Image 1 (tube, one colour):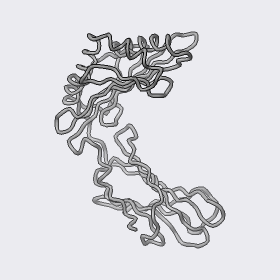
Image 2 (cartoon, helix red, strand yellow):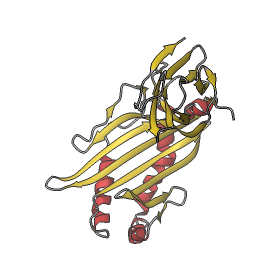
Image 3 (cartoon, rainbow, N blue to C red):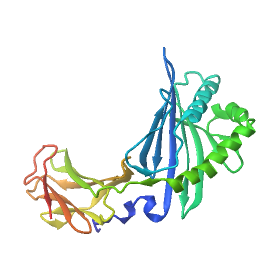
Image 4 (cartoon, one colour):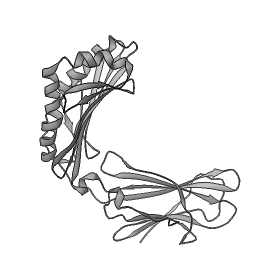
Length: 285
């Protein structure tokens, strides 16, 4: 089995002509101080703005070069507070509500638009932007669904926001160029007395990264048993964690190698295996 993993699958959607814009809102009840609202806005998985009920003003991140986003989150705040109040009438112990709405485009066209709500961390109700109707995701949402489906004017506005205005905003957003950066760390966890789980942890903004491989005494040897990711980190980079099983009974030297367009990054683990958690040397060429 080839242990080289091609890295082109990690390229963000924006590199393939696709973009995403998501508004992630949370409303929660704070005993003694009333409800609190927070919203994070993400573009292609990168956090570009934060807003809360304190000022209801958007705080845009330095990563933005240009944008066409509203300067306030007041309408979203009112929507969440209204939902928190309405849902609490039907569900006891409603501590918080979460809303995820936005759109995804492909080749300048709308691919999907969404507006989903969760209560106490569990899926609750979902908006059909085409039909402008709500769908219950749990039995406890049936009465809210019937109530919200009666607000035709509001549902029309919700549909317009995610199908039209979201698309217009995406076309105006541009992120600053990020510096190419690839960090590689190696960790090992002993499993019994004869083997260890060796993990290669890669964080990268470099689109030229091509492969990640595990070596034994300088040669590709072991196979990955798990691959986690790629996962967006929120700052424009992606995270990948690869795990291999290695023996502790030999004095072989294991390492992880990340290959980019113009260099290799190598981290070696241990000249002889002991029951320590991590040791590493970084070599760049």
